Length: 542
Image (cartoon, rainbow, N blue to C red; front, side, top):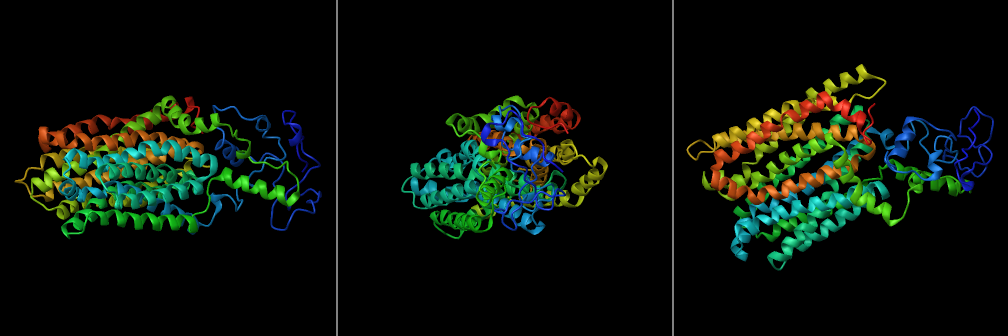
């Protein structure tokens, strides 16, 4: 098999020399003597859809590509994967390795969200020690979540420029330092500032862990891995108040909570450094290109990522332009973002609603009040089980039906079709059983419906975003995370006033009505999603 001629658009330095073929080629042309054993020189021709996707992860559809990339299909020196079974491709790594990385990514998300809600149980101590108002004390939760708004602007696009691993290491190293700073903070102002910076760094896994999963799994096999990932954003906020509440009841000083968060963050940082490899395909291909240049002495081998402009304008576009550009141009991404943002805000609103319903209404201490979050977590676990044992098997049946093409992303919305009404019902149930004269078991168990609905909604819509925007999943998730975090930071600030003025019944009814109005969103996407994707510049329609 002879190689194609070089394109006339390629610059002189990229014009191919005599043909070079991969090991095992049917052609009799020999591999250059400088080629070491075990290092495969790529077949010097266009290798199909996999390579197209790798290039697409570097250059978005609306971006102008460098001159050498215009003739990418004929370029003899563009380093690509060696077919669909290349062992260097993260999607072809062993199953246990991919599951370990997926599980560890979920732990990172759990770490970040656990830290966001953990201080809720120590707020009475802070109010007493530093004579704070309730509003200022609440800022410790809101300001951390506000950091989620800023962090994704940097962490997600940068992970698409330099790789996932360096960004995970840098963000969690800084995150650990800021937890130490919170533990030794001398005054409320310093504590609030360090909480914001901690939230800024903790935002990294909220966007990049989803992209990490997209790096490792094909759309057809991503459902199970995303189930664990979707549980983490609700498991952290649900379990944080339980730990801190019982620490307060036990008489532990509030600073020890931040030392616990420090130890958790440090353990995760060590785990990233020693056990999490690079998974971003364009970065791995860049390393492969460097190895080929070194092994063959031929400097013309290059990867798509190496052609990416290095000027500040490109960096500014990656950081500030890409996520917001997608949000503005993509109606389906905007609708999903608004729905997920409302649901996310409601989770953090409960941190102010629960003390009113359970601490004041049922006269519970901080530990018992924090324990009321347990059904929220258990509901999320039930939703994860539903995904693994019911929804995912149904999705797998669709794989054979649509083969050899991928299953349309709209099939991911099935879980949201159930989760949306369950979530709305949970708020009505919680509100109208929150009377002090009614057993606390009634409103407590209502939160299991909230947890069940939240995880099904998040899991469904997370999968939809990744399937629809797979090559730019990190930027799509970054835009969604920024808006979602604004809701998460803002809702706790008015929750206390809303529940005090409207009372728990009518405040919860108001939230239930808004949730009711948003139920049509996944149904509409199920019907009109394919049409919207055909019109999209970022989401492939096939």
